[in-house]
Length: 369
Image 1 (cartoon, rainbow, N blue to C red):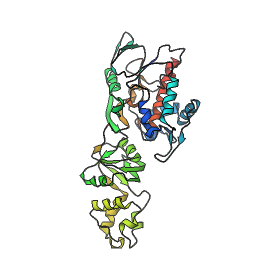
Image 2 (cartoon, helix red, strand yellow; image 1 turned 180 degrees about the vertical axis):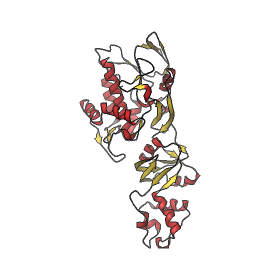
Image 3 (spheres, one colour; image 1 turned 60 degrees about the horizontal axis):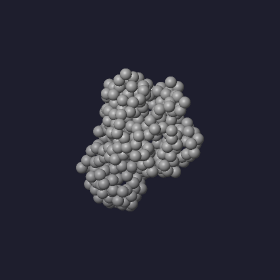
Image 4 (cartoon, rainbow, N blue to C red; image 1 turned 90 degrees about the horizontal axis):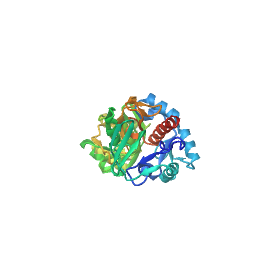
């Protein structure tokens, strides 16, 4: 939508093909309906992908550029850090949808229309859709990834890319909760409980809340951790910046001395086969087992899949895309933007920021050329 906001004097015939009945279906459900649009701490190291290229992209359209652009369009996100540090939320996702509706007023829109195939011949792209054929000299593919299939997410971007000989890096659900193996089934007994923790995965540290769920565990810190997870072990520190031993010099029961919810401690103690007894009666081995609260290491069984994932990680290899325009290096006048590319950000507005930056660069290039 942002990329289609082109110079009307240069582009007389611009159209937007949308699989849904309205624009912005995914925007509407983002951020719990309040659209987490950007983040105070946007930086290349908060993304999975080529960090040097990501840095260049973000330099063209920064967090401040985003906020300035939104303000010009009468949208004023607020900094709300209860879920993720540095996150900017709108009053409602509808603000962003209405903004894009106004920006694309003069653009022809084809709703409830699915792209089925693309053919390039005689310098023209023929787009075969579920309703009609559309011909264009330039084609921008920004159809997202595989997450949110209920919102008509599809693999069409990847099919088009492969048709023009692009390489697709392995696709996986991301920003998604984890399922657990038998040894962690005790998590399920805590469904609904939320804890602040640190999660360590692939040499990264993610801070935030963990939410125990019926199928495993989720929550903001877990969703961001899933971005970097590749089937190995993760480590959870349930007592960040606290030394377990400093709480054990007492006659109180374990469940009364440690600053964690009693129902959590009850299930944790069961999982390590330790009764809830006076801390003064703990032997060295039992104290070592309690130290697992600072470094609970295990391998998740898997994740909740694309139906629960907020984004898709992997995608079209960036080195086959000119990031000064987002034009394909394989096919002239073909452009790829957004989730279909091999760039994925953490939870907290990072993905909206990078997608808007890509669209800004692409639109600027199209207007210039």
